[in-house]
Length: 239
Image (cartoon, rainbow, N blue to C red; front, side, top):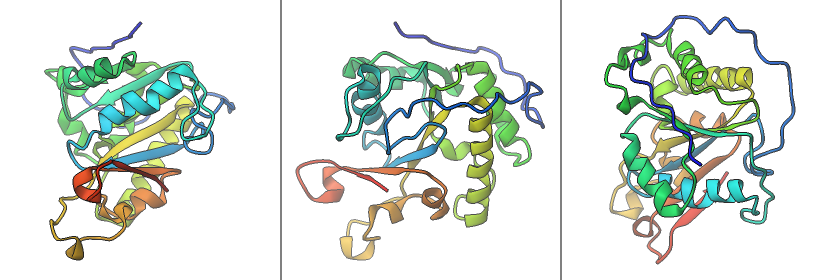
């Protein structure tokens, strides 16, 4: 049974973290052993439209929900799976979950909130508190898995600035630890040049922004289309 959270009215962004005390340290099973450890901040990058949402629904979340191994690694179903969606209305994501036969996660869609105060994400001094507030609204139990699509909206500063990215992911990690969650955040890659001789050789170097996006992620996944790999199949990598 799917659980939905649709908030019609959200107050403006706060300037400080919520006053409720952090949860005591705990140890929950890893959603995917070695690949997505509990309490980690992991990322999934790929070109716009390559199928990141479909991959999450049909591969990652399906395996976690059923307890089936993924790529040979054991999986463990968390107490809850939640999702914060920023770039598209939820109906676009729901279609992929339905096609994959995967239960919809409990979700919060900013595009489904007509009066959402987007300006709260512009001020670098309020972004961390806003992320913390949204997690409070989503109200996932400790040990849950959270997907954020896309994650860069919650990184204050410029994505091409290594220090901004490092600090931003550090702030996100603090919020994740506070709520005792595991995070898989989605990134987009930069526009690709058709000539493979003039583009980055390694897929992880094509991610839009600083190399800090990988350096400060516990596991960085990337998804490439057949057009990019010049092969008849998709390519998934994990760093």
